[in-house]
Amino acid sequence: MTVYDVFETEKNQIDQLLHSGFKMTRITSNLDGDVVHMERIETNEQRTIRLTNPESRKYLTTLLIRQGREGTIT
Image (cartoon, rainbow, N blue to C red; front, side, top):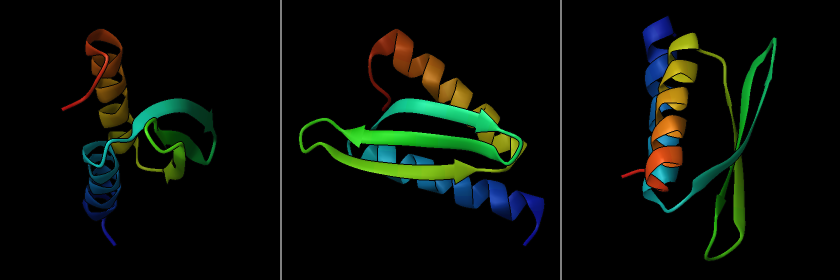
């Protein structure tokens, strides 16, 4: 799998969860990547994904800033 393919896969995971009503609640970073904890507030359903690609981590940061400003991501 190419680096771009990894980015696309991780980006799609993020987008699918966000469009399903999940919000980012916590991010833990370490040398292996970012662990993103997400929760659907209405149902208390929780999901966790690991991002290893630097471009995915940048994309996540952009979305996190937008979520903080707007209170939601669309």
